[in-house]
Image 1 (cartoon, rainbow, N blue to C red):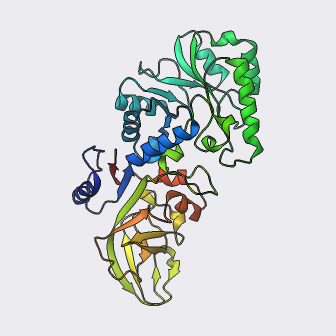
Image 2: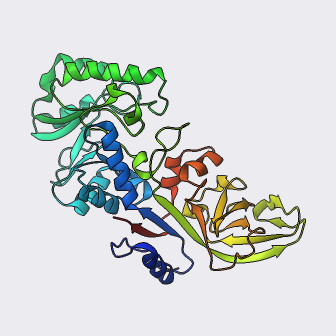
Image 3: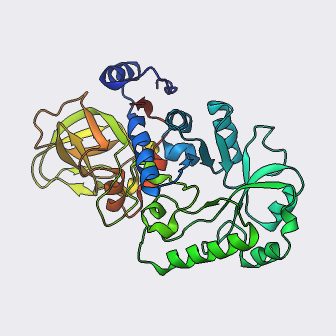
Length: 376
């Protein structure tokens, strides 16, 4: 197999795609529209009415943290969030000095090798570890997720003795909303009130960070000094049940390897799970669950070929997936099937077919794709 493509700013548009396909025959292509990412980030900032960071954890939801963060930086984004220390170190190397990079899962003193990363303090133990060290950090208060962040008992102890924060320069105090994608959920207001109260007692005067992607679309009470959108920047709908206000970012294309005719009664794929009801033409496409095209999509999804939808038939296997192209007579080997992207085939659409969320579709996209960053 050809080696994986290292991201290059030189690949652009149709010419870039043609060159990429020529250099990586048979390999699927993951196309990322950086212009759409930047437009979404700007839109979210306008809606929030205050600064918004760029959440680029999990390799920017699988789309390439270095390329995404550089595009956002060049558009004016000055604050980024990652999950792990290793992600923070890699992002610092990609961005250089200047933008602030916070590590949501935190890290012990000295572990960032003087990279100037900002730890998020998630417990009293974290606060004690950083006490008196003169470093800038974020303080995370849990208001209902019961995941990371100081719980109510720790918050009370810290409010009673704020001296524990001596020698820590708090950049922001933050919390994370559990139900922001359900605007009417009572948990939203409960968390907002808890956060306002705890922040006032523990860190009066310190800037606050409250809204995630969906939180930006709640009422004005959820505005803060810094929002932390992630999924919405990448085209995932932050308002489930309503029209998606975000631009689409991702397209996944894979090569048609064979087109064959089968007779009525013939079966396709592992387990003989699909039987042709009449003579059919079946296209075998070079992508499968090893590429992040989930096995749970078997018999439930579609691809787009020559502008028409081709239903997925049989099971998704490790490297191959089969589609019924009987109604697309021009389908032939060498064509490129659009697996993700296009009308009715967004990551959210695909997620709905297999009972998951668009986040998982994006972050599952495999490393075998040649990646093409466009539109920056």
